[in-house]
Image (cartoon, rainbow, N blue to C red; front, side, top):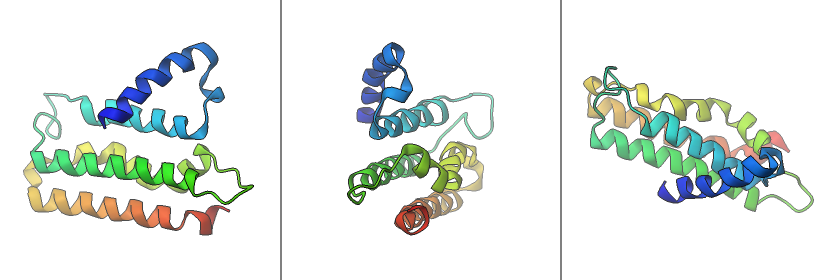
Length: 140
């Protein structure tokens, strides 16, 4: 995660100079996942039931899901068949439910217990895997 956030910092300077549209698709993925990390993982609200405290197991599973999504999205670009243009928008559209779920992970309540949280997040992890596994069947 630290690496992704560092890459985002470097890319932000480029975006300010030439705009986001000039970035390659891999860099667009990095920016979007880094934004989710910053806005939905790192920012906390001490006055909300879901955010004032984050147990270690929830933190670990949230990190696993974010990095897993990032790695699979990058892998889709790398594994693209020759003469096939894969874009971040294609990936985002195909995985919209799972991408949105990444932003909602923080709303799992610690009071619901470890078993519920780990089960929910491991299910999301598998959903991400399954959705990326079907990318080429459904998009191209």
